[in-house]
Amino acid sequence: MYTLIISLSPYNTTVANLNTQPLVANGGTITEIENGWRLEIPAGEKGSYRLAQLDDYADLSRKQFPWQPGISLSLEARASHQTIPGTWGFGLWNDPFSLSLGFGGGMRRLPAPPNAAWFFFASPPNYLSLRDDIPAQGALAATFRSRPLPAPLLALASPALPFMAWPPTTRLVRRLARAFIRQDAHQLDMDVTDWHSYSLHWREQQVQFEVNGQSVFQTAIAPYRPLGFVLWIDNQYAALPPNGKLGFGTLKNQEPAWIEVRLLEVNVG
Image (cartoon, rainbow, N blue to C red):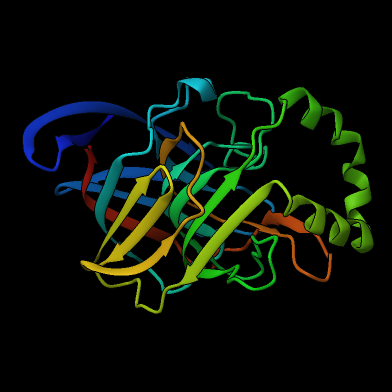
């Protein structure tokens, strides 16, 4: 178990504790550093999913996820490399299909449309956008807002997944999905190997992102409640590009990769 510091309001110094749980796979490690953690995955070939993750929802149903609009999350972070094969990041989401797309385990849940507000870092060939006019890889401040759909309805659609290998089908699905999955994203131009402070402020109708105390992105596409906190690094990729060539899997890491996070706080109110 690990401790997440929570301040009950910006003007209240009362502190509560929340236990987060580690999730690691194939050599991933989580070690404590001063005021934070180091999450690391080892070097390795593609075909093996490597993960180090902290979250606060592993044993909860989505209805029990702890966070509602009206919170601000802040932390300091740095990474071992400017581009890490796979993805890493931190923020809030509803764990719509489990972070590992079936590779990494976690509580079994039926699929759900994505809702998220997070700082997301994705190397090529990741392409995580249904829209063609927003960035889909690199260093991103990003949100998803999806209308609730009955989970059994999504599960019944699974027999159609093999047809997604046909690019015209994937292009059609991308267009149709925009009707109920809204998203927004902003590219961040920064050296992620240096320490930076990151903040996101989630309100009912808005999410604001800050880096080093400066506002870098504000969007009215705010996720539906409730959400859980996640902090992770892995070697996974998923691509849903405009050309319809769907892809997902794992990437080779030439050398170990890590992220360090410190001074994590969630202000409520």
